[in-house]
Length: 165
Image (tube, rainbow, N blue to C red; front, side, top):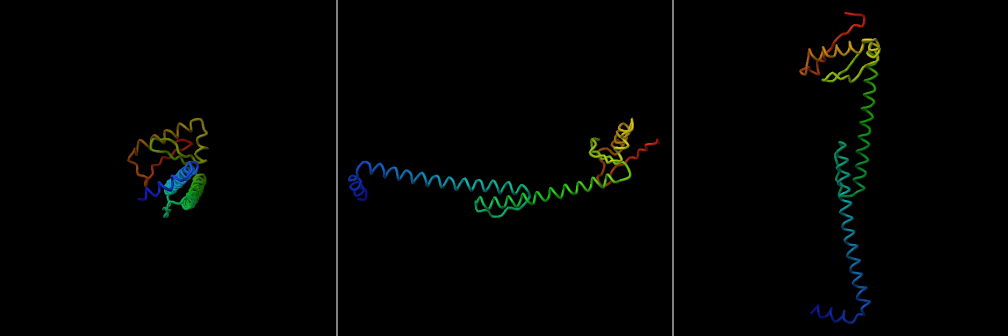
């Protein structure tokens, strides 16, 4: 019955009106599709922003899929990370200054004997003709003595005298 009524009404419309109505329905459908996909895209972007921010070590808030909330959380997380990096850099700088102020030469090495750090006193000791070779021998001796079982709580040391044994 409804189909018959719709057919009766539509059959009285001119062809231009039918094409216009069809185009209108198509446009409305496309707009609804675009809005739905846009909302999905915003939710996906918000989820990615929240994941990025959580990698920086800050617990995520409930984002409800909103990009603005995720962006504000990301700004907060980058602020926290920036502060941590600044503090770490300041600590490293203070540690370097402390080690440079020691009256003894200090050479820090990794497990394989690679030099990680030399303070200014150690650099001064290494300026002699055989300074590097003497220091390398001392590092080799310490590594051979303690090997890979050395404890970080009990660091290995070696004393090298510049004026002879």
